[in-house]
Length: 174
Image (cartoon, rainbow, N blue to C red):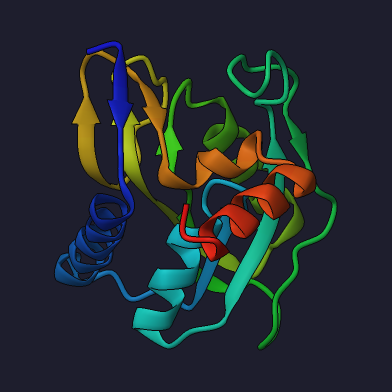
């Protein structure tokens, strides 16, 4: 399989399965942190299910070739969250693990900066076979490492003027 296309219903079902997998494992975490941008929606839903504040850390490496080729990894200096800082057991959430570089480097980054962390476990929707990092929790293992087309990617190329035209067209019933 070269490409994997995922719609909104499937996407939400996968997030729910991931949340349930973490719950059934018995892991009780003190903090939840998602990696923006891909892990934002995953982290948001899981934080709502667990009724916990969500920490957000921006990390980006897929900026080259319209977001289809991995480049240099940038990790934000600060984490945005309410309810205190990261401490104790952490659940680190992202949408997928591709090469494994991002999760490996982010965990190193967190351990260096947050001495109050006692454990970090990772949760993703998709785990690709090419990864050098195995997440603690994942919903789908992808042995062929396809490119994943997520439902929100339609907004990557939609510009404000195009959105305006689309909404006008819908309003006219076209």
